[in-house]
Image 1 (tube, rainbow, N blue to C red):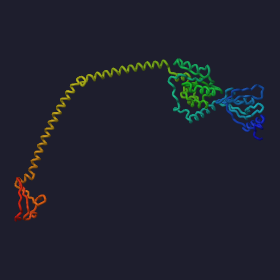
Image 2 (image 1 turned 135 degrees about the vertical axis):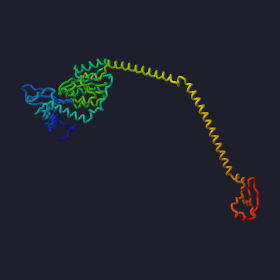
Image 3 (image 1 turned 180 degrees about the vertical axis):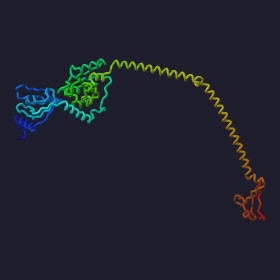
Image 4 (image 1 turned 45 degrees about the vertical axis):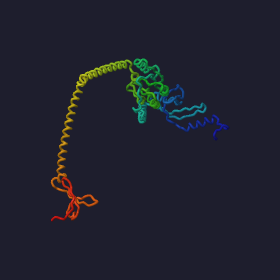
Length: 406
């Protein structure tokens, strides 16, 4: 058959038959869900069921033989978790889809616990339980969001305890189912409505069986709690109960009453604490002032402050002594150096040429015209006729060399 066009559209029967053919190709499938409606009238050949997805607002019509329900080892009631095996059919006359079930198995508590443990391991591996992701609760929240069942004991406990501890506390309450097939979608809508509009959110529910607490171990709810920007406190069941929401939430409370105590501070206790801290602060301040006053009094009685001029006088006398001692040392050193200079002068005079000449010696120099006189060191340097200059202690004379003396 050619594709449909605006000029050659398909009739409704053709579209319905094609949809029926596509669905028929799916074959038989296993489906898990929660029974929300069971209609099995006596004497009828077909029982009508509604199977709902606990994590989404989706359902599927199911038909089966009434004997299939009667043969179930566990009585099937509305709200029970089941696994169905059957084949989907599309009814072209009504345009609806229905699953014809040939096998129905109730999901037991053991299987539910095993599934919760598998989901727990998966969420832990993804890091949703990481303590570093936990957000701190505000010390004094202005508005608290509360998600719980209408007129429940959990709601009463949270509101009563919180208002007794802090009368000015304000709550934004969202009533939702806390068990059954509609619980998870309703709780997700409440969290989405409260997230970002309150300071902290409390999920509260009383105790119950594993099946009753099953919505709080739902994967979609756990991921929504992890993604929320507002701190969330999980107060589900009693102390032994531990749904997965307790691990994903920012804080786990053993009971709804405990959640109110964790979220709302006790006004009386805080006032008593403030009074005690003020008293301790005042006492510490008084002790510090007294300690510093005693220290100042001790400083005032020290000799340096009692008679400050005495220290200056002592230092003045010491400076005078040091100046006199320095002057004596300088004079002594000068006298010592003068004596040393005199000794050196005497030695120099003794060893000098003038002293030698005074003892009768003479210095003979050869005189050559146009040059400076040269000391005569050898007789060979003064042949006969050489002009010489003879210097003695009291002057000098000139002479001429007559010859060598043998």
